[in-house]
Image (cartoon, rainbow, N blue to C red; front, side, top):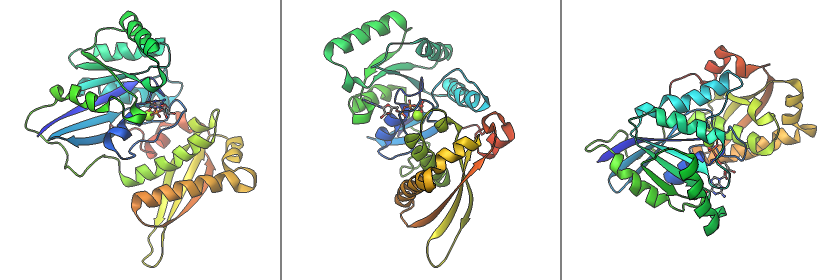
Length: 297
Ligand SMILES: Nc1nc2c(ncn2[C@@H]2O[C@H](COP(=O)(O)OP(=O)(O)OP(=O)(O)O)[C@@H](O)[C@H]2O)c(=O)[nH]1
Ligand SMILES: [Mg+2]
């Protein structure tokens, strides 16, 4: 078997996690239309034609405003030197920004790592727009070992991407068993599911101010296991928004999250959600560590 590690990096919201899920054909990473969805590195393992591709989804690289943001951006940058190839992703529907150029500088500084530029969301571009994008890439970005055009959400260009990456894999190795598609612990995936429901249903600063923690699991021989889960927000006003009028919002979040968790676990569960205020938790290292954010992944 041939195998290798491939980092997927880019600005927030360009579609990194969507591509990883498509490649793995499982939902390993949560996705939303809000920038800053992914908070840590997540492996998505793909086995095809005797090749093992270990993709590493990373948080969108941005200028951090707090300790959590610093951890997020550093998680992406830290692994660039340790992988066999880097995919730097652009949102093809947007002009190349200083944010993209900042990502590129980081990618170029991992001098020895091969790098492929991925233009994503081409489903939204016509031929002329795509041609203009190619020109813009030539003008504004540095040298890459290849350019691949995809629409990750629809799988367009994905087989070609895998073919393009084959040459970067190492011979005669296999890093993970063939039935393993991620290194995310199942409880971590469960907390991410709750976070995704909140991300999708709320706006403004709420999505960024939320953290999820499983506090306790009551195992019951007869009947369903009960998961007690805390939703942390930074202020009282945010608590009110998450709970909603008469508890409506929290109920919706709970129902949607539970259904997805049950699918993941393949059994019915009870899910009890509690909303707690932890002021400025994104700036507090001990609490971030408790949430698992300062592990080297
Ligand atoms: N039209 C179109 N939209 C896409 C495509 N891929 C992703 N998207 C959308 O882009 C948005 C962001 O997707 P994510 O996968 O969460 O982006 P990300 O790069 O992981 O974002 P962060 O985790 O915040 O860094 C979502 O609304 C996706 O549905 C695509 O190929 N075509
Ligand atoms: Mg993401």
